[in-house]
Length: 332
Ligand code: NDP
Image (cartoon, rainbow, N blue to C red; front, top):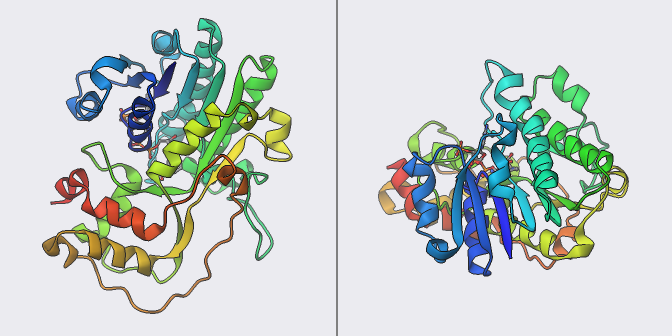
């Protein structure tokens, strides 16, 4: 059983790679540069990596660069996509093109080399819930973000995820559904880091320790654990009935998997950070007020849970991040 993971060096993909190796798969992982030890060393040190992990160089902006990594694989997990919230100087070049054209490039590679039976694309709740909705709406895989409004409001990262997922379903239909396909739509992901450098979502929590953010918000935020997110990808691939078609993705939502563990007050997040970090770092986290000014958001994740998942709590997720060595080293 051989599978390809694009962007293997990333936060979510590192866990996905570790979990696949643990389950006995042979993994072809793509990285942008083999010369970057900070992107490869933690992968090559994973249990099973010596025998069953092979790394390949590939870039979303070089369409044919994925062929070698995808060749011989029965499954492809396409996780690579630029993820940053800061305002890009050139949104098309930095976010939209790699997300959309990169997704199509990996799909094309999977079709060209042959033998691929399932393709799982990492999308986002940013492709689900950024649109007008009535008060109390329960978000589910049936929802799609409004791309026109995202473009008008210059919400470039959510736009990149929305158009990339839509492009994947469009391509799948237009190319005669050459393999099964599913999309995983995580909300903000946290939990222990395997990679040595802070990714965007880990940096959000690091900011409370490093002083970049000096107040804990009183509202709520939706989170999902990185380990649950990685497992959702694997279960969607392993279970044949999990796949969907473009028509289903746009109507019933079949084939799309919302990954949201919990909508929790920031207060709980701050307390879990304080509980998990070594004392000197915990002391730097601002003390949250008791006030919670917002109700948690409601999500329907029943399709994802039916794959066999049980979400970790936000407290467990944040505590495990705060206790993990790479996170502590990155913020010291
Ligand atoms: P990371 O930034 O850790 O991972 C992103 C990966 O994409 C990296 O391996 C990165 O490579 C790779 N990548 C970016 N641009 C290119 C490119 N031009 N060519 C090849 N590879 C590229 O973030 P996450 O692990 O958090 O994100 C993984 C996926 O999950 C993304 O699709 C993201 O949109 C999605 N997601 C993440 C959420 C989160 O909260 N973390 C929430 C919802 C969805 P390199 O390391 O070289 O930069």
